[in-house]
Length: 338
Ligand SMILES: [Zn+2]
Ligand SMILES: [Zn+2]
Image (cartoon, rainbow, N blue to C red; front, side, top):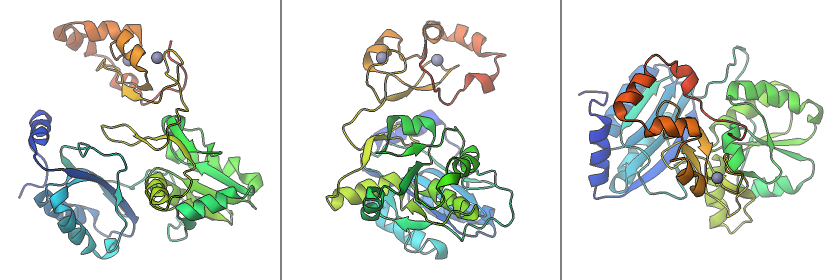
């Protein structure tokens, strides 16, 4: 069988629209030693393809990280398939909170150097030595203690639209820079409780191991991240200490956790937490835009992009030619755009 997708994106999107069943958006990860990531990847592709699973999965020597959508009627079969793999037996599956099931339209499984790029080249660093897990209840209790520092291990654009009350941001756009930065920021607070969190738990789990590696003693990380915290807190009627939106890396760009809007439109400064990508294909900037500005700028990040976006297709193609893509595709912007 063919172990890669060969169908065009347009055709795949069309097929997704025509589906008559529901899909469930699920994420999971596991740090575990995988001897032959390529062989593991091929086997996994074959079994998940049969179950019409879509999504993005990374496999590396250090483990697996998956964000997928599973047809509702295949969820049980999917779970059995997964649990038949030794190190994934019994693994927690995070189900998206606010979900329309249209998150992905194709299955991609890639072999990577790491499941989370970390820039760590110290051979004595050991993922087996991680911080202690806290669940929603444990998190709430520990964060009531003034001796606890809450550390957000996500990117700026994620923190911007939603974070835990009192959480500090580690201000870098890459996880590899955040690790040493977190150690430096907290170096005078080694006696405090450090709780780290991220979206689904994968980054803070590694970060907790990194802090322990650098001499911190009381390091905790939020089990299953914001996603699992929210599910648990809602089920158990606990106070939810997360304010705003949880940014997620799929077409939805975020799920609302609380009604608070803690960020502003990057164009007019009005309260807003809707991320969008600039509609000028040569820009595609990820930024926050309110509805009024979306109208005013035709979904673009600036007057310049609005002008390009309004050009006929042929002219846009000419413009795009010869422009350095590395410069055009910014991921996020910190400052207000003007
Ligand atoms: Zn605006
Ligand atoms: Zn733009």
